[in-house]
Image (tube, rainbow, N blue to C red; front, side, top):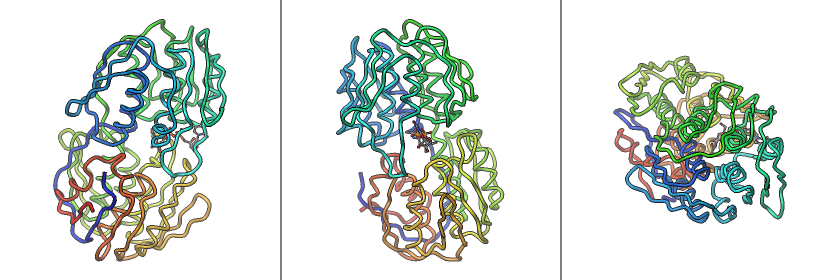
Length: 417
Ligand code: UD1
């Protein structure tokens, strides 16, 4: 993993990139294997640090994990251990996804309270209330979520206050082995949730309504191993689309599903980008300076919070003023101060950022506070005058495989230090 990215700004990004499997899907697919004994193969696995961390976590629970190219094979024992320790969990939010499978299969789970990105408070109340509704006891004790269901889980109707991705996944992966029917109302509709649900169905689960706000799960007694290809990473695909727009470039993105990027594409089109479909992906061209566009982040199918730093980076050098509203994670504007170091003119009030587009950013040292913020800063550095150093770039490697190399292949002047 790299410490710093050094970027010399200038030039359009031109060429082709290939997008691999989604971080936010593969980690949950790996966690879901705990639901059945036997050997699973997951393909289209991205080469990122978080996959290593999840592999270590599963290994510690008694699984055998082997990587072959972009596939991971996981052999789950008859009785996995039910504890996920802090030293691993602190590194990655998605560790919490072992909670539902463990309670359902082993009848108990102790999962350290997760770490992950510095993007504001990330409570677990919806996960806990969901498991309680299924008949588990769940509480926070000595820094662990401790959940128990010694007599198994029972299906229930669960109305989520917010369509949380993680809570929907944890409840769904627990309910697949519950007695009777579970209905999750106000469920998350993210493609990552659909991918996990389809994997569970391939394992013998009975889930319907995936991709809608109401997911229905008929509990089954037992699941069996299955093989599955991870869905393409829509956030990385979307990042390349913004990279083309910001640098007035022309990028063809392969291995991507444009259907998952409808709203980001609407925003890019309003900014002046020309987006067309291409074989196994799409092409984004920008022939002049972007027009500033307003946007509000929302759960899927709304504009993804994970692309918010990228649209702020675009608006920072766009023609005109814009307002970006963050509705999902309150701490996500932390990186705006860093963008200010590059000369961006942004004023944050509450969950709104008012941005005055400037004609030219100027290179400076900045610090990545999380994966997406780090990527947003790199995109801004690509059009800043002179040298930009993005420190703490290991965050970027957690979620974006080969980012620096792919940028170089498109003509950027970027190196890892
Ligand atoms: C996942 C993604 C993250 C993405 C986010 C929203 C992973 C590993 N991460 O995070 O990249 O930005 O979805 O698309 O997949 N909330 C509660 N109580 C809870 C759970 C969540 O109040 O029990 C709140 C959160 O604080 C946040 C909002 O709900 O404000 C959305 O969080 P959630 O959808 O759960 O995000 P994650 O699953 O953590």
